[in-house]
Length: 328
Ligand code: 2P0
Image (cartoon, rainbow, N blue to C red; front, side):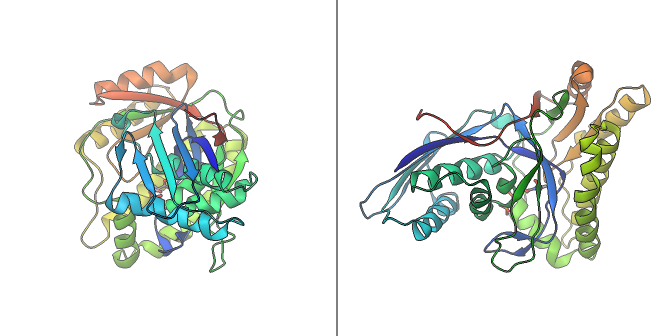
């Protein structure tokens, strides 16, 4: 009744932005991401037979409020589905990447939690079921159960059984790909992704165009990843990031996650290309750009990020599947 799992975060090349079902976390459109190795979150879950409240510890402290509730809600799903009677649980989770990376750890955290909780409850490994469960914690987490390049197919069903992440190419498909996270701002963002995407769906007149376009792009990018065509993949990733942010700018009140340094890095990225270095950016719901490049250009791109205000640069490459590991 105890298991520990480890999962990598992911960065979307075609973003998820907007839910059609808030409770089950079902998206309006498909998305596609790559896992970020070596960054990882490790989560232990132990079910007991006792009644009582779950114990939730995240990064060395006891979680409370909404953060705790999201974990308990996922554990409740497992308790309802399990064949045996499960009582209160103890959950301990920790990320190994610096908070300074500016990356949301929720994708890795809920993927690791889903794998650990199902295993602790006696279920055999099943990446589809794990991805569906991870999605209930945080949408993007369904793309961190498998490694490499993963597409989250939006699905059509009201119960969400056809809305999960599926690996398109494994972690070894494109070993020279690098994803450099440039930490240009440490400020806590004013509007969380969850609230930002809800506001965008409800108030941005561009939302339907975004959803239609992203759905097509999540398919169009696949053959370019297959060919390891950085220019084509990078071009789609940049365009998709601009379109997500443009849709958010058009919300009421407007949502702008960019900072002046973000634009400075974007400009520098264009300048790098003019000089023959292959680098393209993507941007989540925050100010810190992630640059796509190859191992050969990694040092040049990292230097440019630092010159344009990145206090720290975290270098990542495609990571592997979420996996069971020995207890810490
Ligand atoms: C993504 N983001 O595709 C997009 C791009 C942020 C920008 O998924 O409400 O933490 O828990 O489903 O997954 C961040 O949103 O939101 C996100 P919930 P989540 O990676």
